[in-house]
Length: 83
Length: 375
Image (tube, rainbow over all chains, first blue to last red; front, top):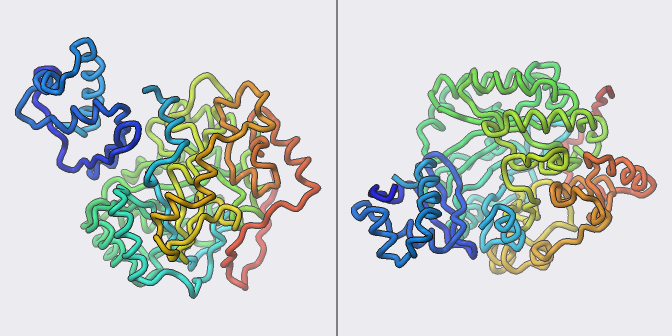
């Protein structure tokens, strides 16, 4: 996951919410709760060229927290929110 | 953030609904005995095409991802496709519920060609006898024909939407098989005593033993079946919570816009007590959603009331507001279908009072009361 280059699926829209954001995939109609503002920040920063690790570092996420982000991003990838 | 924490946040409401139901018309070709909106005849005050488009513009601005369109029978509206195309054009996906009567081969093809569109065909029995007893003679064949047209047109995964009653609960596996046969997804929801359902609920709602049957079936099959998260009152039955959000979203993350533009807390509470305002009011839908006294109140922490001393309250959340309201049970009392049996006592206590009557009855005047046998 850390070496992957990911980006938000073009059919996914994010709606900011107090807890983070709602992500909706217009293609598969899945609705996912992004339950932390930092996850939203990372997802928005993924540009399909930098790796996940580079993006986490660029966003100043403490390495101790990386595993939880890996988990969150893996879930988003499984739901095809990220590609 | 855990799921419980998320639910607590959602109970405080969001800036815009996640899931909004919009009933486009009270007109319907059918007269289902459990119709949640007592539909039948069109209301002369229904929103015009321009008014409906203005609401869609607002929903676009609020970033509402998709809407659930229903009725009545929404396809009866002459501007149905126009509104569908407008909504999708504004980036608002549409899922609409229909009895299928107006889906012929040509319409199925037209629907197949549209993006961001989901269709729910209502069906309440896997055979004509079971279905037609509730939805009216011929309605089973109508639904199956529509499903066939959608399959032939290559629509893909549409939904078969079932209201669970004591007469079809034994057909859950058959419904699943039927959905699989048509490449469809099964959606099952809870029967509420709303609309004409207020009159038929006592004869139709699942028995205590059947509540367990539904729970067990959902624990086994729930991941592949949609439920609108409507069975959360069953969570008190076991350790394992059913998939989905365990909360009542009324006025917090869901609401209803009725055909004349009135906004209610949810599709199952068409009654003045749960009317928050109208899209025709100044400030439109957005203002109703964000400012109305009713929705503000619903987003406050709710009292567990009579259920406070019950160990299952965290699991069932006291059940469904609409189910309590239309059976005369206080809103902080137990759900009439409380799986711990408190509902029966509450129903008994409520039997001496007149339960509130659903409003906005648009039933056809010719309607003959249908008697459904008890079992």
